[in-house]
Length: 238
Image (cartoon, rainbow, N blue to C red; front, side, top):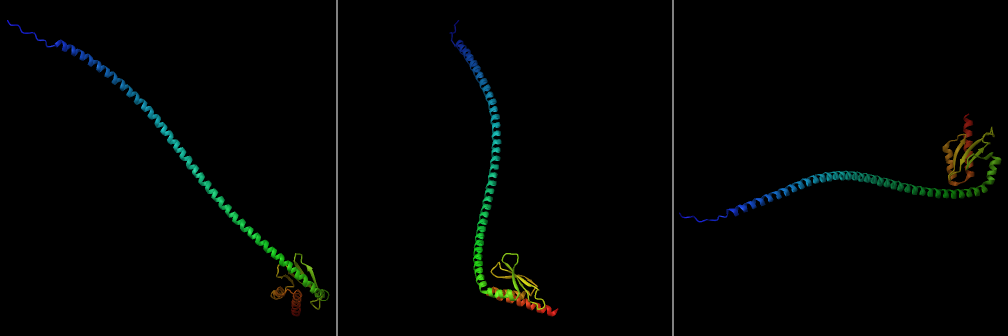
């Protein structure tokens, strides 16, 4: 019989290689499984840490939001207080300006009043000088009126007021008195009281002539004449 030749197919070598491959593959799987497990654990750990960080960040955000709200309220309050203070300052400035204007106006009025008083004093001094001069000229005539016509001059109880009293008006009663008071405060004279009450219109006419002429003796004559006319009419009708 013929013998078949022996052929080496390398099965042993192939088997060894397959065994080594299987070992290497198992080692590879084991290494990667461990790596994947470690990475998963690390990932889970990172997730937990991230959640903690997220909670902390959220808490901080809430904290800062509240602080921001508090700061906004403080700023709003300060703005309101500043606006109120500015308004108060403006009001005070306005009142101060008003007071200064009033003060300026009052000072001007005071100066005007002082000037008016100076003018009046100067006018009264001139008036007194004129009256003094006139009195010296009319002294004999006034003496005649007092001695022979029953007239006397009295104080009226008020500064710059004179009372003139006439007697010898009524023939049947020479002691009966007729009087009037002259206000000499202002430049223009004024009869403020008359007894008995003579017609005011007639008195005003006599006083107007006095203020125009400044002739006091003529004024006294005019007033005596009014009293005489009043007495004649009253006693004639009585």
